[in-house]
Amino acid sequence: MPLPAVNAKLISLIASAAIGIGILLSGFVISEPAPYEIYMAGLIAVWALFGLRISRAIVPLLVLLVAMNIGGMIAMTQMADLANTPLYLAVSLFLAFSAVFFASVTSVQPSLYRLIFIAYVVSAVATSLLGIAGYFHAFPGAEMFTKYDRAAGAFQDPNVFGPFLVLPGTYLLYLLLTGPLSRMPLLAVPLLIITAGIFFSFSRGAWGMFAVSAVLLTACLFLQSASGKFRLRVVVMTIAALALLAIAILVILQLPGVSDMFTQRAQLEQSYDSARLGRFARYTIGFQLAMEHPFGIGPLVFGTIYGEDTHDIWLKTLMDYGWLGFVSFLTLTLWTIGAGFRILLRDRPWQPYLLCAYVAYLGNIGLGTFIDIDHWRHLYLLLGLIWGAIALEYRHQRELRLGAPASLLAISPAR
Image (cartoon, rainbow, N blue to C red):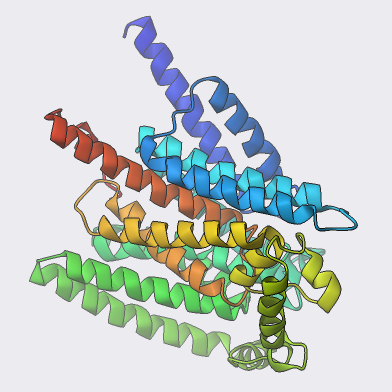
């Protein structure tokens, strides 16, 4: 091969490895700033120096996320004591740029989708094993991977650990439903580990997210295919999966302590939800407060006043980012859902990745009504993956209008 071609291939391999390492680190967020932030901040800076290209289709993502963070900076001016607010907003701004980064690199090099998803699965399996080991006290010091007697993996909170596992679990489920039967054992093992991680997190939100994502994924596959044979396969495998899941849960519930925790966490309403100043009461107080403070009250201030954080992404944006941040985030959410849905079932090589990311994103947004998802790293990764597909579709349609070769269709599909 000519030297320029060798160099180009080497640069591509280094770039792919760099992104893979970043995704692997996303499963280990015990403290802030985490290794993920430090590594990705450096990677984004280096990539920008060597030509990070932001597609025109990704500009709305950049503008809305920056506007949201400007709202946070304005809200900071309403605070008497800044405390750790500058660091908090710095992380917010970094996460915003990370979403734009992932959208940009996947829109330019769509083959990175497969690498990102594989690295995400590896990271999820690793952190799931840590969480499971911690829950069962498998080795001395393993309890550091638990919190509130629940598996937390290499995360600060089991309520973040569980949702983090939903996308890789959904992706493995997709591969099981659409791939050859010979690969099922290879896919079933990591899927069982991730599912166990979700279960032992005892996060009601994660349980609901995974269930909703699985249902939406199955429904989309059923509607997308015109093959009666494939539809029958999806139905049969879904029934088999549900039966195996039910059997596995019944077996797990026989373990000491698991049944009591499951019964407690399976209740829709907990004591801290309906107390006098519980989660639901704070929603009312917070929205009334937002009417009096259009610029917000400052990041993390709500928790210092009422003893608990907002536990609602919409109230969170109003309090921490003001009305500017709230409108920006709402607009971004509706735009992402609408633009993603419009291209969701189009037959494209990147469609499997878009489908898995999209259903997981819907689950995260739905869960955001009951918990803060403001600094969830995987939420910004999901945004980047979806907007990368939006930019790819924009580029593909532009090539068709100009009569250029549809080069994007040469990308290898997920399976």
